[in-house]
Image 1 (cartoon, rainbow, N blue to C red):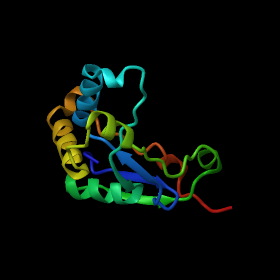
Image 2 (image 1 turned 90 degrees about the vertical axis):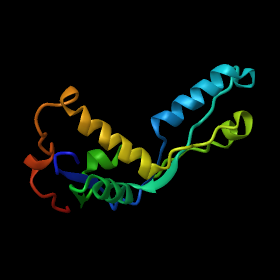
Image 3 (image 1 turned 90 degrees about the horizontal axis):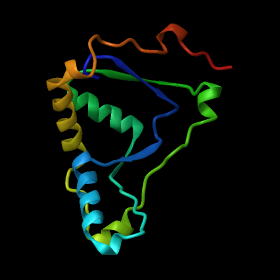
Image 4 (image 1 turned 180 degrees about the vertical axis):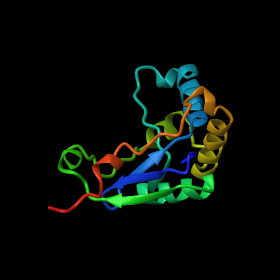
Length: 140
């Protein structure tokens, strides 16, 4: 994304995920750590549900560059695909009053700004698409 690279998205991109901004996760940990109601409990954190395709489109819009392409699942990747997956956070909301504060687009924008600012701390050179050497995938 930051190197204007193409994202390879397997399948139709309609798999759903939810993403939670790190600051909201920290807030949940702090609430759980300071509240005896949380003792011995397990909580899920949920974020904004979005398809992988819509996520790619949003990230490209926010970054002002990049692209994606849909490719069929190779058999070895299809075997491990989890489909749609997102959490039910109703337990932590009712028990501790936690709720997500940072909407997805703001969290992604903050994350992109962070990595632009601190890029040298994480990688040196633009990376190459690890699947480019495979060439175009052909249906069987």
